[in-house]
Image (cartoon, rainbow, N blue to C red; front, side, top):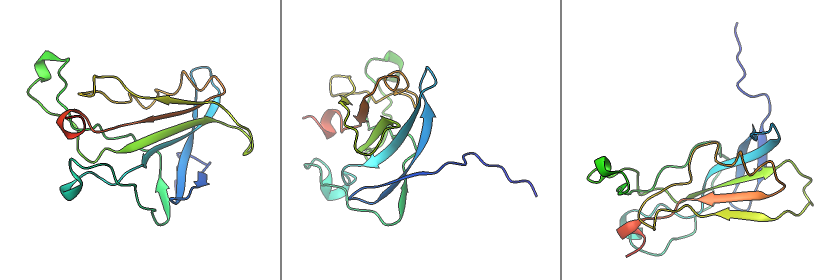
Length: 154
């Protein structure tokens, strides 16, 4: 019998919305940090919720897998000429990521909130490793996706 472990360490934290399972990652200089990704902060803005103010996400049952990449919000990448007529992304995209160094539960750190650019028309938080450069410092980093263009900024 062959058993392969991709990770022997499970990182689970409790929040008021429910449990989150994150993962350990390493910064560009090898410092270990915790990553919790694709955490819903609002209900999917679909159907009757489209073009309305966001509605807080409901608590989930069990443990949420917080190790996945965020889906890109629906947009037309206008900065890339060959893509101007090709929408990419999806409307169910209201998620955030939290990255933090390994600290005691009582230690207080500054929080860096990164809002991606793109003129409210296009953009995203970047690659899975976008936090690697910030995690060499003692900060908590939060980034998120938000509705773009006509679906978010009329």
